[in-house]
Length: 473
Image (cartoon, rainbow, N blue to C red; front, side, top):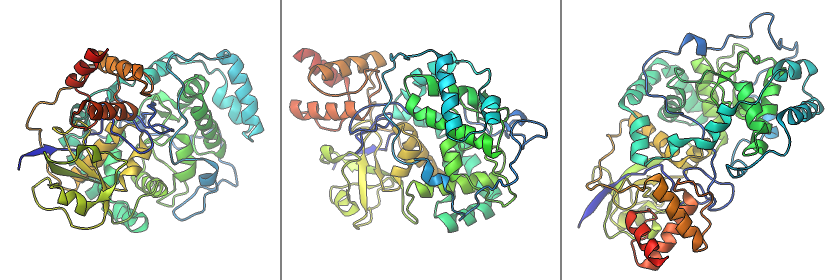
């Protein structure tokens, strides 16, 4: 029986809620909310001094309120209910959208809104006085080209041997904290460390931009304004609470905080003082970073003692149309169809539900994705990122390197991908924005056309399919 070795790629697969390279808020509509790495190379260096947050320096910004309390493990946090920090973000507007009012007019209105929400005049002044629109942040939000590449290229650049080695070192260095987090939250050390590695290389790549400037720009911009207005308001609340100052809020272009890159709403709702020193420090305190990350993942639905992702081998006789995240079948069924573990051994013959993912088609990588994989997809809505992070965690746990396909897999160039989307759109399919990113909605349309044309319905866009569509035009 002929077998093709496949691995779960993170590039847009058919997802139940319509995730593309990015995930959508409505079924099968492509959208972009891709946070996380911005192309930093893996590194073994220690966090740079300028990336470490000064802890409430005397005489600057918001002083700690006398009644200030920070949540610790197991402490009820009313902000967890105030901010919606699970599920999908609002669907963004098209990249060519236009703002209805000028930045200064909008900012004046937002200041009034912040005051009505209880933010102190002092914080509003400290955080928003002199803010200007940052065109560079808007350009990055529009592009995010790092995600627009094949899964194998993406994973090779991010899930490096250095990150595997450094992740294992971090687990040894913080063994006591990881053991505690595993006991209290049920999240494995490798899973936390995989995110930690990809998000900042353990603090070396947190970003060097003023977070308040990024958030103010993104909150004004028409593309994701609805989402980032909430993040900007949460950032003001962080400052008002006395956790940080505008000057010490330094991070990524997307306004994320700390070594595992929490958006402000996530920080307020789920960051905890895990070492009990009275301060939450996600910039430089490994204990707080580990505990807060585990706390957030539990909120997203992490299931204790269950797997998240597993590389597998499939047979050429597999019913390809079953290979999608929306289809969850017992492992016994996948085993009956000839799917095995990557080393050729048998899958457990049990009822645990799993989805088979073939993000680069039947000749590319293949993985079984379990219920815990949904946590990855909530963490970062790029499927490429989610699978890479999940696979990196298995590598840190000792899984072997990803097996290479036995044949070259064609990848559409971006212009070809745009043409494919236009061809599908012309036939009545909703492919979202014609942007050259083959997301879930495009893959669903690809699958439908493969069925119509009598091709193997593995949802992977090929030059062969594009040629066939050109012939029908």
